[in-house]
Length: 453
Image (cartoon, rainbow, N blue to C red; front, side, top):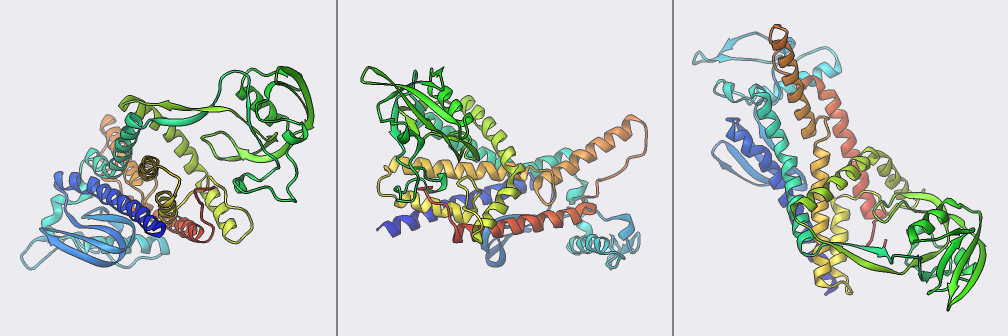
């Protein structure tokens, strides 16, 4: 039965992500059509076509590899002046036709020319006023921002529903002088937490100091302790130095002496980035803090998430490299490493099949994970690099600035921004994303993260 629940969890997650991808592409297609653009394809997935249906001028379908999706908007690349074989030619009916030269000198120039040629082979004279590159800059921004905005809206609605009903739940230390809840018997690396102590594991500094559950910590190296955060900061800053710990047990004032050790531990409860810090081996008594809120609270929480996501995106290549090292056995996989849709499916399956999790907790975990993926996809696509949506948005904004500047100074209209000139960068970015995606998928198969992590 647990196997069926596991498959159910994977299925729920995959269907939710595919639905998010489909809605993302609708976020592009609907405004594109609304502004008169021509959309010839709407597909979920990549690779060979599994199913498709022609409805009007648009082919709707599903492809074999469910790792994304796309809409084909006609006229994304303008014809470059240097690429024109002839300025004007005419078809059999006498209609004016633009042709693009298919041969150029230089690898990058050829790449750009080939892309233009492929684009313009599908464009007829009747499409002249429906080409994407001819849209007003603000229409381009709306079309390209529509996709990631849908993902952020999905995340907002899910977060709002969870925060308004279930609430934001965190374990917080009891106020006042810290009362010890648990004492680690030995030192276990953070990545291996949850396992029992082995004979080769050294005793924790807390055990060496004689600390027990229920003891109240009153001082650390002669400095009075007022709350857990004070104690935590002092322990972490002590590195591997001597520690004289004052504590109260059954009304008696006692003192224990030990030396803290340096261990890799998370920066905080919300930031799982590991840092080498002083370690004692105690946890305080705590309580479940529940915060609920509506849309304003949700926006505030998402603002904090946005800052964390930007920081995560800045370190993404480094973290993916860490996953690659874990694949070959050079390093342990870090608990805060990114995961692919495969890893997300694994975690979803483990959540639903977990025997001790209440159904409500399982549902909340799945919802938060789906919301988190949508939030990340939305933020990621706003990166101002082609082929991401943010690259096209940046191009449209640059076009607006350039034309506005020309009008301000009475200069000739500089025309449309030629995003095709950035295709070499786009190919490099796409190749990097492909490599990172493959590494994460392999990592999620070879050295997966688990709920116990």
